[in-house]
Image (cartoon, rainbow, N blue to C red; front, side, top):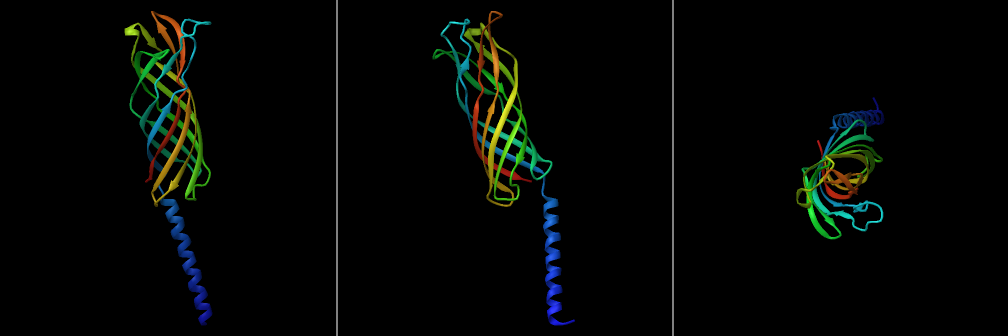
Length: 208
């Protein structure tokens, strides 16, 4: 074999082995991604007038920054499902600026996401899904007021991951969720509050 043929054969062999190694690495990449975020929950503060049409008194719900953990599973490089979790969060309720009590809510969400550039360092995505919020420890108007036990609504999402290492990334995420509840006093509905928070989060992700 001539020297040029030997070099060509060696180059082809190297390229073949590199292709096999890259394919193996892709095949071995875990479908699991876990993120931890700090999320600012900014409520919409929209409610029906307390007491019906023509009344001026309205309810508002306090904003809050909360911790969030989400777990994503990638069915394909582009398509993933994400479960968003936290622990029960306490919010104060105000009537025309006066504190009338508080409640706790637990708002897990399940979303389907599309990731646009999974092989690039900058990985934008969008998502949509369902939010299920359970309400507990409702204490309004010295025990005279109450809220519905749970709320089911849509949630929309947009975000981006930026890879800083093989498995680590920085995440920026925005979600808008529907969280609503009737307000009851003495068994009668007096208003309907729309929490509908805008959630802006920053965190880190780890791909197993």
